[in-house]
Image 1: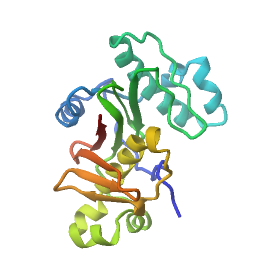
Image 2 (image 1 turned 90 degrees about the vertical axis):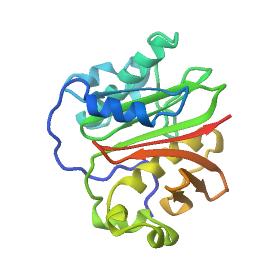
Image 3 (image 1 turned 60 degrees about the horizontal axis):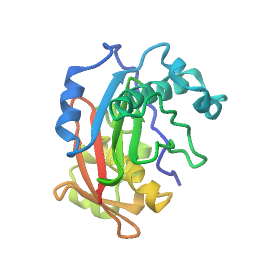
Length: 224
């Protein structure tokens, strides 16, 4: 069974500028109070943004993965610099998520075209998660795995075929992992879009916000 953290295959996306105004507006509207967010359009050369402490984890990765990871870290470092953490390395931990400087929590995400980072004070949030996906249907075989039985009863076919639940569950997984340390399957997270929350198999409640335009963008956050 598939674990969260794997990304579905995506179709080719058009090249855009360094930043996309529509995505910037969507992120600003979604981000909870106290969370700093940023994004960039992934471009050739972003792989060079990986610092020495970060590169080792991606030595065997294909160039596109190194580029995506470098882009996300470039955005995160811009945010961290404003917060007083100049040139902070974000090495990948053994379990996958990056290691953030003491005193902050954060989350990185990317699809084939866009890299996103979100950062907040650890005094305000126990954990935050972000995910970005193209506004396209999930592959049919993956769509069948994402929604729980109750979610399939609750939501329309068009929503179930979209990447909305996928992105929300990815964000929830990222938000809870630093404190709970749980490797979660899609079926172990129940999402209530009307109540703007998700619940993990242990009963952990996580607040969410999501949009499907111009891309599917999802936030998950656990306030202190």
